[in-house]
Image (tube, rainbow, N blue to C red; front, side, top):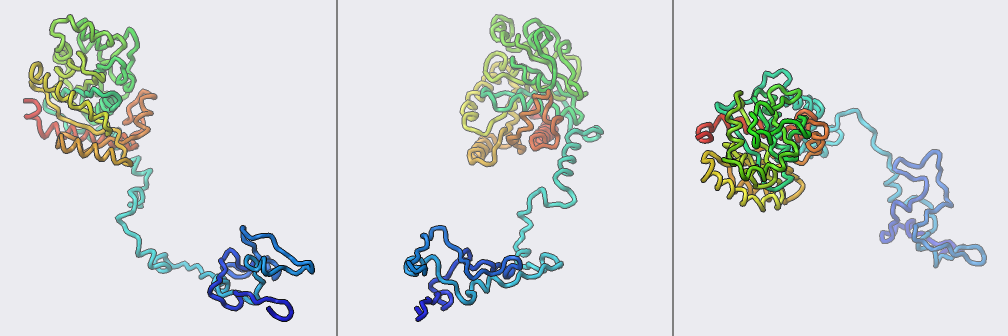
Length: 411
């Protein structure tokens, strides 16, 4: 303290033990220097938020003992920190970024560039448009391999909500758009496959129930799918719900559907049978009529729990009713890459079934769920979406496998 009552500011004295943060620097100082329209006010001092109220003596002079800790006296010159912060900013150069910031540019690893920005010539919208054209195949020039014989595939899983109907509809549309003649048999009383293909299935419409119970030929109930020339659908109405009971007393009840498909006069490359989520007589009819079983598996534990029972039923049908039947294809659906559970389920399924599991995996995608509300498959509703691309890859893989292994599959 001087004789005139002034105290020395530790910052002005250059004390290293009491540095003041940038928030308490003097008003007017900035990285670019004092502001022209905001001159330095020697009487203005920034007060921290936790500072106590200023204490003054009866003479009006501040009580330094009570307030100097939070409001030190204003120094006569800027502190070293303030001088450093007041240094003018470097001028902006027109040189390339690599020349101005060589270190930052050197740290960019091309391996970590996202797929959307990997190629400047193909922005995301362009890539999506290319995928849409590839899937819709408007010219009809691109075709998937056609099998030598008709492949009758039963899409079955006793667990509900694993994507049986969605898989049936989208695989059928993908194959039909690329030169294959496809028939979809909706064997689920809910009729969701008929809805997804925009085929009428209200009460009174000839459906698969008439084929199973009344012996109506399959060609009399099959309907062409609008907008897809190579695709037909045999719808299912609510009448099919009573077929389980009525088939009990019918002769050769397990092979009614197989005989109806065999008597169809036209030739199909693929016949997809959408099964109900049960192991009743409708599913048994589908297993007897089919040569292959396609099992969609949701990447969750409950979907795996009932898989052993389904495999046992398939083995029983093979032993007693249909020796040609085999589990040829496993498709992982509703895959959520954010969870470790999905990875664990995928590894378990691949380790158990081996090459029968398709390389293509169907992710969770809102477009796949939205498409049925418009009476469409995701292939036509949003052909550029991830869901459509994944189902297209799965269909292409199924088609290629059918050409590579025709002998063992049709033995």
